[in-house]
Image (cartoon, rainbow, N blue to C red; front, side, top):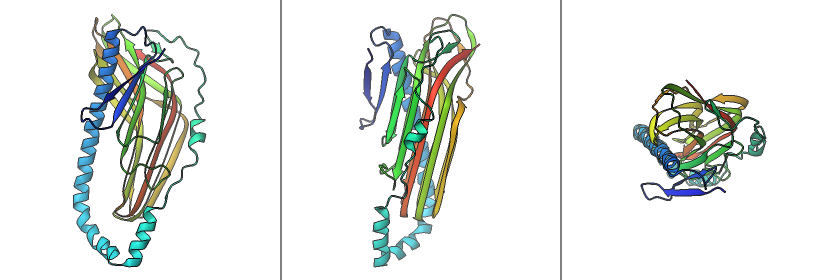
Length: 303
């Protein structure tokens, strides 16, 4: 039996994150609380990073808006230009039609490895989790029984695009209670993994951003100890530009992390993928698409 716990984020907005456990009936209260606290910490850290990015973007806008103002005024004073702009903002710049093909690169096949060992973990993982900031992704999936993960984020003038920024995370976690202290080095691998992105802008002052990556974080008694992120791609364009790319199937390894394990404490390791899309229309339109599809085949720990 599996269960799902939902949490409203601290700002009481409609954003939420989910966590569900492999063995809902037998998971200990301590493990449950530590896992829930770890995901809450991931959300808080992601929101802090998003706020920093938004502040940096606002600073850039403050510098560039005066440069774009004369062009905006010219458009607003021309009835034909205004009509063209209205049509442009209803036009879909991007129509992704390869989503399913990308996901098929990582079929949900069984992984024949002992699921519980001090050195390694394979599906089914102890728990899965997901959350988003600002707008939700177009599609997400996370299956702890097979290790499959996928995120599809879309913003702007694209089929099913959100009207603003999308930041989405999804992943798996495992519990660890070991008595051999010392330095530990957790790892995780996506194999196979694939990603794709596409951004396009048309107009003065418009921009679009797509990025994505792979995170690994360690928690002691539910408190964040250490973590790192591996960005797989980032593309930001503006004006009259377009960029796209894809890679896979390939092996994607988590970033290097180390921590000091102390006997008698409860540890969890969370590994997951993330995607971001955002756009600003300016005097024109913009669209962004980000997607990762992968299978987390193994998580393990080195001494």
